[in-house]
Length: 315
Length: 288
Image 1 (cartoon, rainbow over the protein chains, first blue to last red):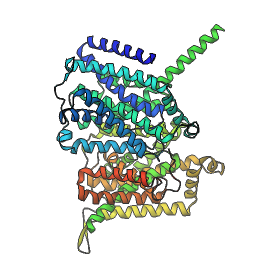
Image 2 (cartoon, chains in turn brown, blue; image 1 turned 180 degrees about the vertical axis):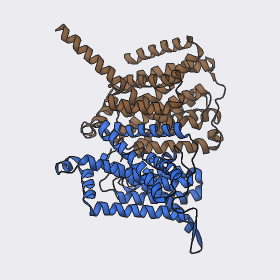
Image 3 (spheres, chains in turn orange, red; image 1 turned 135 degrees about the vertical axis):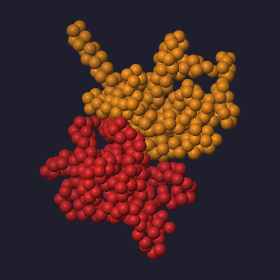
Image 4 (cartoon, each protein chain N blue to C red; image 1 turned 90 degrees about the horizontal axis):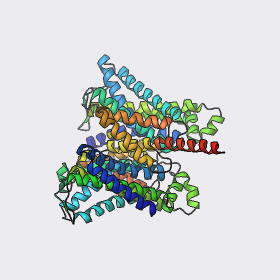
């Protein structure tokens, strides 16, 4: 609880800082925030629960389309449609975790790979629900007590939410639930003997990850003002995966922030957009080969080494 | 109807050729190679490049097989040497990295524009059987699958190499103790997987053209074929691939081409829920 409150305080400070930087940086920070949330979701599955998902982009699509469908077609107010869209992602994730019960966590990736193709069919053939294949447009929004939702306000909100999500995830991974996920990843049989019910735990992890990615999608749709089929393709999922692996894990959520920060800003500032795929692929392979625990793993190793040197000196 | 069925079986044969490779790799390494479709793509490009030099069907096919085989060897080196000892999740991610590298590399070199390819062996002739005009090319695809399936059956049932491959798939440690060169066997499996998909690339490129994402587009149907067949059975991959091709073709006639991936996904979910070990799976897929 204390950690979460601290997280909210940090989030408020980050949001405040972003509110005063120049608009270009603010937009970049907001986009990074969206990607961080998506990677946190993948990280929960991959580095915590030991499952591989290729559907993060499709879950973002569920969130983006979901929120805009509720708002524009059913005229549901924003304060209700956003939680609904997030819940939709959670529900679909839960079902996917159940449907794939007979596959090992890794081979489950086939189902998520199929799901992203299905989502493309919806985005292109969904009729009025998908803007006849061209995507949906964000309507003008008035937030109760605050007033009209401006792009700047959305950007600040993205950063705030991302920091809160990171803080909550940190708490979650250190809770009973997160420990069960780790146990399932490390040794499913041993975990089951400790009383972790594998099927439920796995569906639960998928539900949380689905809801988180969906939230990223909602924020992205608000930030860009549109949804578009091309935002939710497999390439986007693979870029999230690259960020997750390059960021890596030393048991915490640091990697889910480090990875996106590096892989998002490097192509952006060096103007390497054309070589993005090759760059991401190389970064992935290099990380797997040289530092399989990623940047966070290297950092964790370095800090532990430094600590042991210090303690030795004290003796 | 006959023409539809032949077309469905031809499509299924392409899936089956890719699915066999998925199974070959899965049996020996325990991971699903998400870049299996890229072998098909590379085979198609190799075929087109070779077609500029020679019009001999044997030489152009050999070029594609060589291309797929070399790609398979590179995958072997990356998965079993560079990434040796990594957990399954990281090995699968490694194949996804290779997928991204190959597709991104091809996009830089050859752009997204499809290259047209000439039909292998026969030009676009049709054959009249029982009053129905059948494209010879579709029949060639089916014949190639039958030849490959029979060859693999003989390989695994009659030859020492086949027995060694089965032993490595069963238990690499004990196979090594029995004096089987495990690495050479793994290399053979990967090269075989690459070559088979490359042949599929030669056969499919006249229809779709060659472009960077061509293999990735077929991969979902192929891997579902492998899962339907049991994921560790080569006969299963053949039957599963054909089944996906037939179900997809006839379902598409009813619901429309936009929904072909939905049909494939539906088949995957049905099998996972109703019969997770697939049609021919010898061992039940590891539960959870």
